[in-house]
Image 1: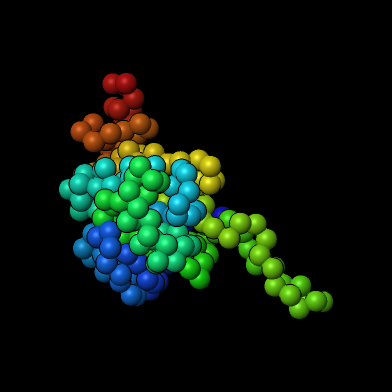
Image 2: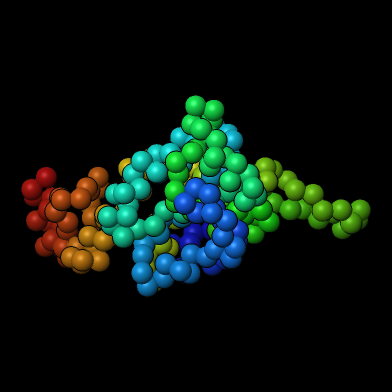
Length: 211
């Protein structure tokens, strides 16, 4: 699994659905560089079980991300038509109607490959000259926090059965912005409104003496 933290987030141009119903061609995270932070997350498939709980949880917290000048963008290997159908299916029927943040279609699986979250790989048999896919042709539950310069500052990847904590994603946005604003680092279990640590021997000694 590649570590992208500290590196430029891989860019792409792909189909997406925005505002729950609008088809967009050549959607790219490039539009946010210099303007917004981004939570870019992958999920395995539309019309499944854990995935709608995560997507709806992000929607419930979307206003809080937006208040932090942070865009939320989801991505799976499904087609734009599958995204559109799921976005227009009521919640009581297993859909995610009401979700407004962009859902990207990684139908070619190249975005998942570039972020190294594809749950498998292509294997080529040179003897038989046959290419097969080993594993599952879907994305793991990868999540990437990208700063306004387009640099990945945080990543986490869960196996497909393990849903993520949206509150933790929000906390990481807070931690990054606190560090950028104050130049202080964030200790374990830090939350917005709490003190940070000056990155000096005296700073850590002062912090530990209080806790």
